[in-house]
Image (cartoon, rainbow, N blue to C red; front, top):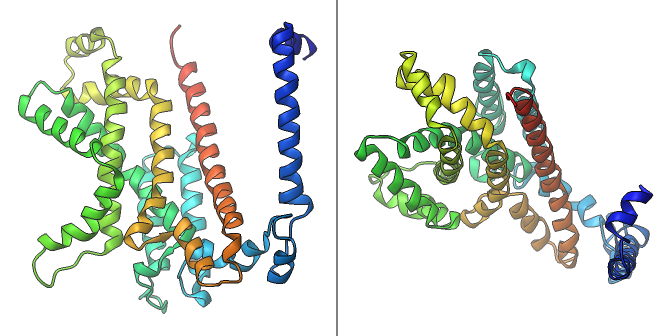
Amino acid sequence: MVTWLRANLFNNVFNSAITVLLGTLLLYVLSQVWGWGINHAVWVADAEQCNTARGVGACWGVVAEKYRIIIFGRYPFEAQWRPLLATLLLMALLLASCVRLFWKPWLAALWVGVLVVFFILMHGGVLGLATVTTDQWGGLPLTILLASLSVVGAFPLAVLLALGRMSDLPVIRSLCTVYVELIRGVPLISVLFMASFLFPLFMPVGTSIDVLLRVLVAMILFAGAYLAEVIRGGLQAIPRGQYEAAASLGLTYWQMQGKIILPQALATVVPGIMNNFISTFKDTSLVTIVSLYELTGSLDLAVNSDPDWLPYKLEGYLFIAAIYFVFCFSLSRYSQWVERQVSRGKVH
């Protein structure tokens, strides 16, 4: 440790001075953050105590008071056990899908079964459960649902688009190129607006598609376009000899792609794929603009409707940021694990 410090931080006078300066600044910032966020903070849901400590300590009481609205949004208070159970089931499914032991053909059936149970719990209308329309869904359950289904739906679409852009057929290649460049040329907000407000104008009179479904399709189409370029980069990294070797074995196009080309291409771009997944998870915060209140939207609902807690929205955002960090950091660590597994199978 001492050797590393001397070699990297104190190897000359200038670097030593910079190290001391930055270290002092870091200690000062950390002491201020500790004093505001921990030492002088208010942890109980008492608005009067928060007002007394305002400007000196954080008011985590806003989280203690409003956490159910932040986590579950406008979902009926007495029925919030349903989104809690549904979210736990979906998260358990996601964790199982990350473990090699569960990478079996029946995993697809498990996904279908869990999603059916999820929607039954969330929507109700059967088994004696009261109906809760999708416009009342929100908070963490909605965030995880949108992120999970967007990733699951975008991945096969991205593979097809990437293969299409590499195709020798001009029509297919042109269509895939136009689609990818068109979607990548506009922000996600524009796609969400079109799906939520413009698309219904083209529907027959009296026909309506649920806004959650429209938003989900928009996110799948958007994420698929970006992910397609990542996968295409992996396909282009595969040496031409791999294609020729597969053709010499008499494999069909889809056999060649499924057994030889795609496994290598996907293994090459694992960091890019996971980066896209993380970006999709964070992009769910944009659905608030179309009146779907995920985590950030639920915080606005919780705080803006109560003037006593409105000054402490920052603490609420920090709480949400911590949730996002936990999920995104977990995805990042899982990506590193996948990279290590892939590297073991490579011939050096």
